[in-house]
Length: 340
Figure 1: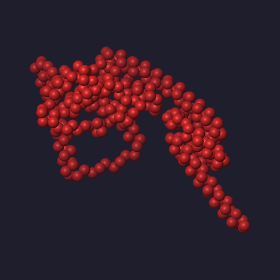
Figure 2 (figure 1 turned 180 degrees about the vertical axis):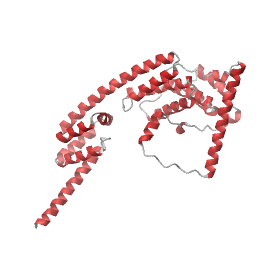
Figure 3 (figure 1 turned 45 degrees about the vertical axis):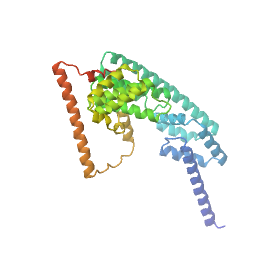
């Protein structure tokens, strides 16, 4: 074989090895989510120097690891000194399967330790906010609940998720105290959506009653009486003996005309978002806004005007009741439930 032929053969072998290493790295990446492009390139280089047996053993090891623990470890590594981590990876390499297992276990232990500290800190902040809430310092309490929530971002443990939800529930009642109806509706809607997707962390009966009850209050004050009535029915179905819900349901029913009660309820759950979901959306590619047809634009404008009239009428009625010194029984029926 000529020197030229040998060179081509060597190039083909090299290209084949690189393609195989890249494929193996991508295969491993499927189990380790969150590796950035630079770390992937380093992994490819390291895999080129490993035997097929070592690579297969590594794949098996990664596949056997707890996905939640791996994701948490990668997320925590992003918060560390990325340059130092990459330099260490470059110098030490992937190492043996046992070495990699030891490194992942060590990182996982660090993640758990740091996560527990964050949960403990957020629990303390939640208690601090509860004390402010009891003094009816709604805005101050809400600010501390938000701080406790943000501190839990990135943690996937069940304990962290439960605490995050409790903070959101408590924040929603602060919004009611501040008469921030739309924020209360958004928060409670997010809780409902989240509970539907988080099968390992379903709403308790008490939480379900609270979240529907509070959203009903928010919708009622926004003039969305049909939706408020539906949410109160949901709360009643969860706990038919809850006196506060039954009083509110009777009051809301009196405010709702017969025609509206017979209409199918169109839920606004999927149209609402909270600051949490908004932050996530900023990280995702934004879709081009859909261009509405003239008919759709006219219908949207009609709905907007109708809702504005409802809110104006509700506000006017409330002001009239205050001016006359009378009581709005249906509104009084929405006395806030106790804090979570």
